[in-house]
Image (cartoon, rainbow, N blue to C red):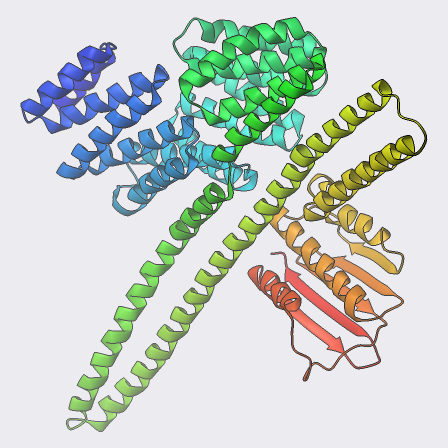
Length: 599
């Protein structure tokens, strides 16, 4: 142990990559595998700090292989987390989340959770998972994970760890447009970074403050903060974080209309982005080049830049990554329950053996046999009930993950329709208007041209309507009441009432209730032939009641088959432990009630 402490002190002073590689190979030749693992880990970190991410992955993988060979659990966890960070930097979120979850599971299964190193390992794993959630825009899951990590950092008294977590939490509140909360956590991060003299952390906080100024429209203040961050990172070899401040400077200069300054930093950023091989940064950069060329009136190059941005974005953030992370979360949550189920099954087998032994003891005493028989039956029934309950919980977790994936996919499609197809159609409209001004169209040709422009306007409106119904902006910004009010007001025969407590529900629950109401109203419009539809929500402290009632033709519950719409509604309701009740008679309309417990 003392030797490893001396090695750690020694490696702190060795920063040359070639020297570290020679040391690692020498340790392997001498059979000193623990020292080789630590040296390869330092090699990987040095390469990552120099933005040589694929070299970092190579050396961290070598360290992991040796750690697995000798069964050093602590080093295995450290290598898993290092690899997760490496892959996160290059936008490979599937690999990143896999390694971080491997580390977290190793912490849960094998580590002594009371030691400082075990707490630190778990905190690092949670930080990595939280960062992946942020990149995939699953902010609810990210916030929960990061607060768990922050609790561990505070327990350890790590100012660096607290600074990182405060900054990440602030970023989530910024995404939610809660700017005062975001600034509060950014200031906590800056205070901790200044306390330990972390230049990287201070630079990142300057970026955070700059972004808040930018969002408020104070571009001069934003540039002041971004330039401060840029000057710090320009003196280091860390090109990854240098890119963050460089891109911010480009973005603000574009917003100000200073195309000359924007072009200067675009040229610098483009060379570094290709050097880093980062799809994330390339997607952002080409989106900025799209804006730059559009402002200059070069629409062909603007369109080419837009296509490049979409190509890099699709390679970074796609449904495969989202579903992979959801599957990992389900696996992590259900693995504990599977352990309990396995133990209960073993207990069930033990009960069977006791049943056989009880039969043998029957010849000795009837009283003992009866006692054992009743006891075994009760335990067996109890065990089977617990197994069934755990299986149901496991199914609900899987169902919830599928619904999360559906919600995230709807959000992604709506964003792509609005930002992608919407931008292209707007660009087409702009070009057609310019063509009209520059051409000499008359008579029937001019009329046909105007009709084409009108059809294009209708297409843009229809695209926006579809994007809005896929994931209404009012739902995420203002909540369930406002979103349903907007939807119901758009249909003349629908009356909407909202009673009780109007406080916001969880984001997932609001989406589920909105989708259920949307489906029930559409069903009534399509099938009931009703002249009036009444929608009502009653929200109490402990439960929420949704009622959709129409005065249509009704139907026979016993003879009418249940369609996919009602089946989906039952599944969504069950995922939150809710109850669905249908009351209908032919010729007397239909009333559907859904109750969901909030506690």
